[in-house]
Image (cartoon, rainbow, N blue to C red; front, side):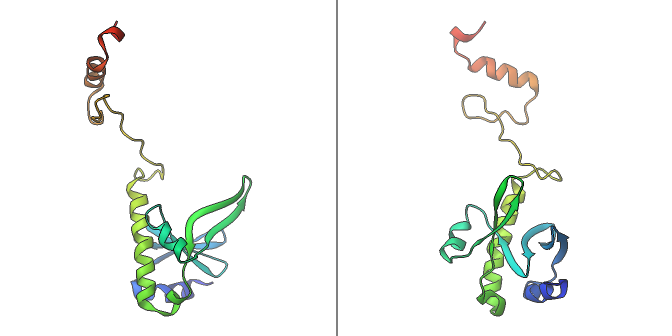
Length: 149
């Protein structure tokens, strides 16, 4: 599928950015990749919140072969009726954009790596944003007397 055909599909959403990738195209709304095209088929981004909706509709995942074997991605096929029905396209793409936003919120800016969860002080309070000295003092204070040296 060429760039113009992809733009035509997503025209009801407004402008999209299309980037070539691994023989297909990544489809972006701003900085968020919410869809991809591969061999003439459009797949939409899912996550654990939206995946059950895509599965209930019987939409298959985007899969590919790698050196590690068959890889199943978080992208699911765009329903056929969404190609012809603007409301359906917007509904499915809204789910994909929300999944892309949630995914981006869990990553560090620019690295593509997920942020580690902040360590806690043993009482369930985050140690993030505390100086190393405060962290050490807090951890020491939460240890039982028999474990202190």
